[in-house]
Amino acid sequence: MSEHEEFLLENSFEKFRASQIFTHLYKHRFQSFSEFFLVSQELRNFLNENFIINSLFPENIQYSKDGTTKFLFRLNDGAAIESVLIPAETLDEDPKLKRLTLCVSSQVGCALNCSFCATGKLGYKRNLEPSEIVDQVLQVEKETQKKISNIVFMGMGEPLHNLENVVKAIDILSNSVSKIISRKKITISTAGIVPKIIELADIPKPVKLAISLHSTTNGVRQKIMPIAKKWNIQDLRKSIVEYYRKTNIPITYEYILFDGLNNSLDDAKRLAKFSRTVPSKVNIIPFHDISFTNPTGFAKDLKPASRDQIQKFVEQLKHLGVNVYVRTSSGEDIDAACGQLAYSIKS
Ligand code: SF4
Image (spheres, rainbow, N blue to C red):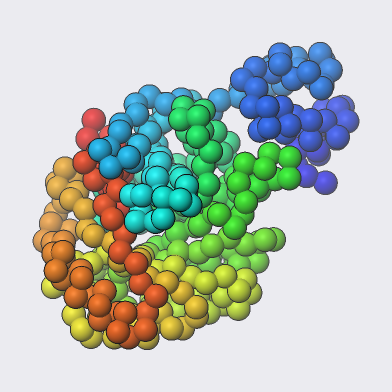
């Protein structure tokens, strides 16, 4: 029995009403309980007294010249998060695929403080509720009147630090009643929370996994991502092997290329070897400016690899047989690109 059915029974309503409520909320997307025509007046009143339908509101929408759209959502407790809508063209994908990817947030802020990321500078505020994750999708579809085809958990926060609520949100989004999106079109990206990667492998119908890798040596990785001091590259590798063994889903590695830090021929060779551990692809990502966060220490000295350096690194990887793609800088002019999400620092 689902927790929704249990809740209804505990409150003296039939459990089959849960599916009707789902239909009203996620299929019809009603904005008021008074529209819930399948349920009794008594249940409508009960819902009205105990719940609200919208958990977030679009406060600001910014449009990039490349077609990317950034949404600032205000939550009911006054906190804010950002979501980014990215059309296929800006990801260098075939426009005929008509892919529309939504990058969703899983937390308010983030505890991990990766040196290249503006969100990390906010610190951790709180986990998002499942409804706050699902509502990012519903609100963006409502605002744009477009159907989202892919969801990536690459917005604000480390999704595996909020695994329970992220999985609940995925269950709602891919539910047979809501049918908002197929689980095959959902990717969770992690900085490498090893035990949670293993846990994620065990959920029914697992989703795609992306690893924020950025270096294959412990020394450099620990400088870029403090979490790598807790879970080293060897542990991470083992968890990836386990994830693939259990799910049979190829892994995506995200690799931000920095000038003089992780872009040598040796780096390419090590990355090629690492990526062969299980079937995978590598996304090379340009480093995006986060000087608006006034970075200090190691973060202050990070420099983006040049276009030529990126091209050379990619050619080396291709030569080594790696399935590699270069991600373009979607929405950089509106600070919506990878690593740039940080509403409060800018406002
Ligand atoms: S990159 Fe992801 S995990 Fe790292 S600080 Fe930013 S939001 Fe957190």
